[in-house]
Length: 244
Image (cartoon, rainbow, N blue to C red; front, side, top):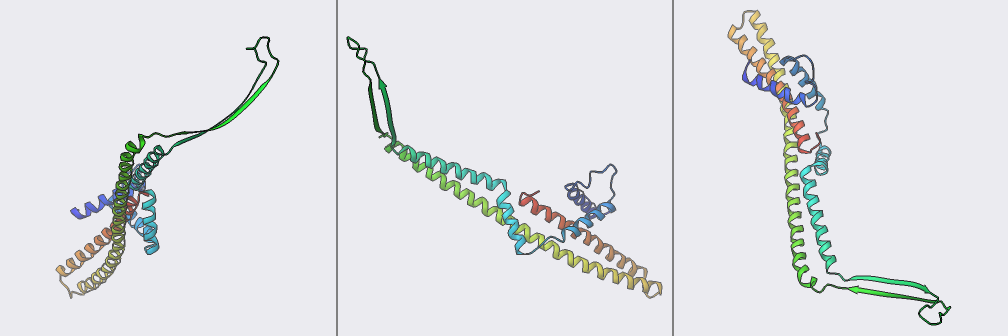
């Protein structure tokens, strides 16, 4: 078994295990792994590959990517800090109101059997003059932190968008490679059939037959590799968008 075939087998194991297909009591051979990879690849080929699907992938990444959530939360925390520093510079206003009924008057001799009712309403204003000097510096620092957090969030968003776009282009390229490889397999099968007939009619040498067989085997292996590559790029897109 060639090294390339063994590597493809390992790729199949890694991808199929992510779908729970390797959770079986008996070990699977390479042929069975290739069959399962082929089935998975054909099922993934129904995935939409238009502009709408690319937009959905970007939306999913923005909604689910943990890095974007972290940077967005940092922006919100710093904005809340700015609001707190602004509130410290505002005066504290309070309204006071009371109503009191008192009687009889016991401090008089003799005691007066009278009732007194009094009420009052007031407005209190409290302002910390030191906040004009101290909070101004803190407010500037809080606003600077907001700008830095927004820049980090924008940078993270650009990184995620670029990664998703690159992954999506690779995903589409994998489909193109698959179609090309399918045509190669078709041509290799036709060439093998023609060479086999010529060999049976003693019109071709054994070396011609071996070359045709090697070409057919190489095309078949390339087709398997192309299908595994679709699986790899599909699950890479799932990883990039954090939708695994």
